[in-house]
Length: 95
Image (cartoon, rainbow, N blue to C red; front, side):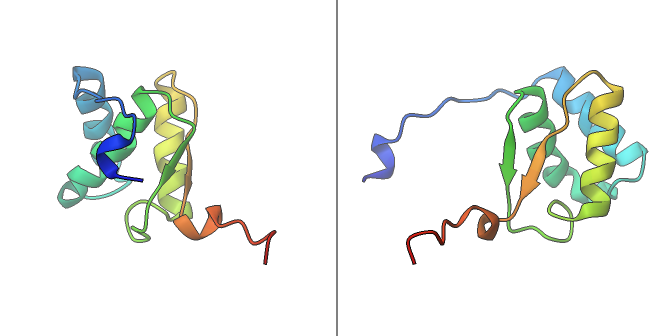
């Protein structure tokens, strides 16, 4: 499959996303230097995605941080988001 053949949706940066990012940082879920990481989570949250997959174990796939992100999400009327590593999605059933 060619990457150009994949059907995708462009998700725009909105004021709601930026507000959520700033709250993650203000509430010390992560520091200011993790702004871009927070953008990934906030965009997925505001877009109401079910799952975010990342290899970033320091700032994203980290139980302490996941609880922080989801606490803020729920406080702001968003559902919690499941955050996993790609390894969690591997299907070993056919091995």
